[in-house]
Image (cartoon, helix red, strand yellow):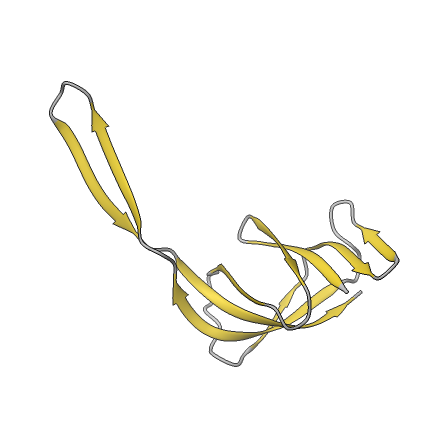
Length: 105
């Protein structure tokens, strides 16, 4: 059984037991807190596939928060040729690591 969820403007294919990093949202969940994703775009249970338009009604993916993490460092480099303009910045995205516990169709 697997599902496709949407959170933070990105889509993830998840199944029970998966550990994924998702975009942090406004209220930061504590470690071991229950998290529910209600934007479920598709649910597949062996031969039965439910595709939502845009979401599957009543489907929920339940997960457990494992705490806050930071993404890899990305280099942001800006340059304008022949003008002597160069800027170098770094960026690390704030993420939340979650473990998928259950998919309820």
